[in-house]
Amino acid sequence: ADETKSAAAAIAAGYIILAIVTLLWMILFIVTCDKCTDTCMTRVIIGIGMAIGGLVTAVGYWVYAGEGLGDENGEGVAFYVGYTILIGGLCTIWGLDILWDDVKNVKR
Image (cartoon, rainbow, N blue to C red; front, top):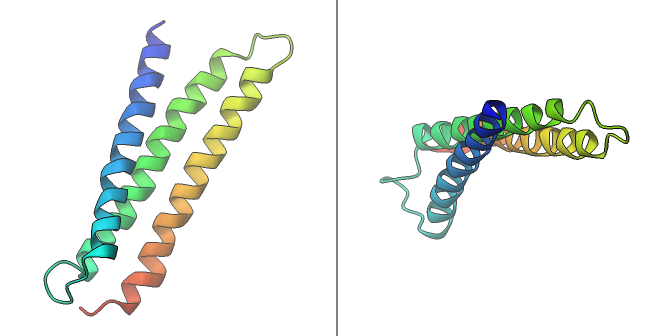
């Protein structure tokens, strides 16, 4: 029961981090100001925030997957392991893309 609450809290915290970082990303995309907001440090913060949010959410799903190991058919385990790979992998790749690709193209 306590692990379920911890997993739900991790999933919620990870999605909140992702929502904040994604909102910041959208604001920077819509309102581009060359000197005020779109700096190298801003992109680094967005990239690291994206990776952290995805990994925190993935940890929560991983805990949920561990709770279903006693099931006969294992559908819950497969579902949560899939979500772990999806959310952790995509957010980490997107964060690394921001860090490696966009940071080198931004004016310092």
